[in-house]
Structure formats: structure tokens, C-alpha cells
Length: 272
Length: 153
Image 1: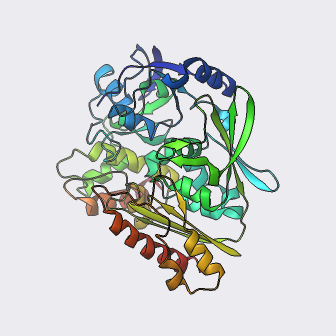
Image 2 (image 1 turned 180 degrees about the horizontal axis):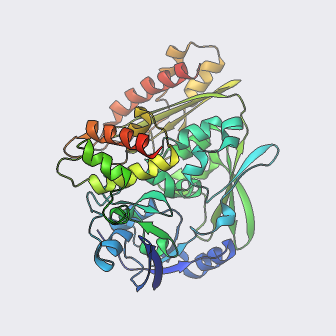
């Protein structure tokens, strides 16, 4: 399968990428690792006229301690996350979830910024960043702004990013000593999650769901029940509250709701 | 556009369409057909090659993205008549049946052993999760990679 023709622009700076977006508007798409965009282009579900390759912006590939939070460059690859000593020490849940994305080959190419900007509710990292209360930094022609993860994911493949904005950084609060478990249910080892559930216990317990609606979701009912002292088994029964599980070849919405309850219970037990 | 890619040690320059996929570049432009196109949707791993030493699925990468990089394909592993230790181990342990997944399996294993030189069996099974064998010959593939790890240690 071959993508439809496009013009290829290689950005040598974030500013150049933003300028290209400003010039080409809706006709342009940013290319990072390409693990989500290229399959869509091969299937001709995406046919951008201009591809702006930001994959070589090495200055946007970093993981550093910024005091109150970790600053992660948007071009940081999943491979860099899953092997990061810094993440192991102060944000183990993100490292653990990154190791579950796709397979080795995908993790060698895919980036945290690409995954977030794509806004696929079946992706692992957006849900993890939602659970961790991350903040995203977007840079556009008018400068930089930050958007909280809870405000960022608007719908299926829709985010708060404007067409002329580049996601440059992900800021993640540090959670040293946090216990976590990620339960990812799929049929083939490297597939997208049919449903995924992440539990992070760090004082309070936070639970996020993958592929249970048009966006990654927090399981607020579960979190409330646990905060009120409910046992895990009872709290997990509320996992599907407020979700809008899609139906597709892999599962009906009803089956996904069942999976969410089971996977949340398992994740909470494993993170106890 | 022009791309300059070092393939199996040889520097090459070609004028290509931006939409040319790396796997097509390798097979149709360079003429190295050892790399296979399987699912064409980055699921099966048959098209796995090394880009700057790391395994990637070449059906889901543009040749333009590999511009300036070093690419190694299955044809680049052996030195004259001597097989690479991973190739030799697949031969010795019968790590292939129909052979279609083999080039990708071997390249994924080479990358895996570079990252985890002394893997457990579990490391290997997880590390090869991006490669499917339609003959379901996983047992011998895993044995071959375990043996290769011993040989390359």
C-alpha cells in the first residue's frame, strides 16, 4: 500500500515547522516517528498534501528533572522512555506503560509527542498521561501555551492543538515510589488495546482507561469509591461509569464494559 | 527528492518520490529482495531491518526518513561465506519453516541481542512480539535466539 502523493518538508527547527504549518494550514500534517500517521496514509484514510517532518528535531528529545515535574521533549521515543533511569526513579508508571506500546520496532520509532498529538483513545501513553495529570506545551506562531491533560483530548483523533501548533513538551508530575499496574487486553501481542486499565497508587489512587470512549478517560467512579473507602472489588464495579465504549470487530461495547471492570480490578490488585 | 542512505556498508544516492516507503526503496530501487513485505500494516514484522542499528518496520517508514542513515538488511549480516551468529543459530536450530518471516525475525533478533546481550527466554518472546510466524514455529525461533545469545556473548 502506497500513500497518496504529498510534498515533503523537513523542518530543521521547531520554528520552521510552525512556519510551515502556518503556510499550509489544514493541508499539512506533522510527521514525527510516523507509527500512527503512516499507516493511515497508506490506507488513504489520511491524505495530507504536505508532510512536515519534525523527526530530526533532536533538541526536542530529552527527559529532564525540572524540579516540580519531569520535562519530556515531544520527540522522545518510547524506547527512550522505557529505558530511562530517571523515569524509573521518579515516574515508574510512565516508563512501565511506554514499555507496553506496540513492539520493539514501533518503540524504536514512535514518540511521546506523536502519540499524544494523534489523540487515539486506543493508545497507551495518552491514558497514562491523563492518569498522571500531565501538562502539554504547545507552541504556535503566537508563542507557547500549556494545556492540562484533562482538557487536551477533545474527541476521536481530536485534541486541543490548533492546526498551526506544535506539541513541544510533556510535563509530568514526579511520583517517586508510586505503585502502578497496567492491564492491556488484546488478541495479538503487539496489537492496540481492546481495553486497557492503568492504576497508579501514590497516596490517592488514580485510574485511567484506554479505548473506552472517543478519548482516554479517567475512571472517576472508581477513584471516588476508593477515596470513600470502598474495597477494590466494589470500586472496580464502577469502572464503566461515564464511558462510551466503542463497538468494532474486536468487541461489543458491552464486552468492553465487562473488560473495563475486570481489568481495573486486576490493576488495582496488582498495584496494591 | 534526493536521499543518501548507506545500505549494508555501501553509500547510495537516489532520486525518489517522497512517498516511497523504505521497504520499496530496499527491494525495488536498491534491488535487495531479502526484506519481505508481509502484512504491509506494521503488524507482522517481515519487513524488519536495522536503521542506525535498531530494528524498524520498513513498511512503515519513508525512505526520506532514512536519509542520512545506515540501513542493514538480511543481505548485510553475513561476511563472505560466514553466516552471522544469529543466522547460524536459526540454521542449526531449525528456526524456520516456510521462511517468509525469517529475514525479519533474524533482524529483530539481532537488534534484540544488541539491546539485551544475555536475554532470558521471556526477554526473547517479548522482544520478538512484533514478528509473526504463520507456521507458528516460535519454539525453535526462541531456541535459536537463545543459542545465538550464547554464541555472541
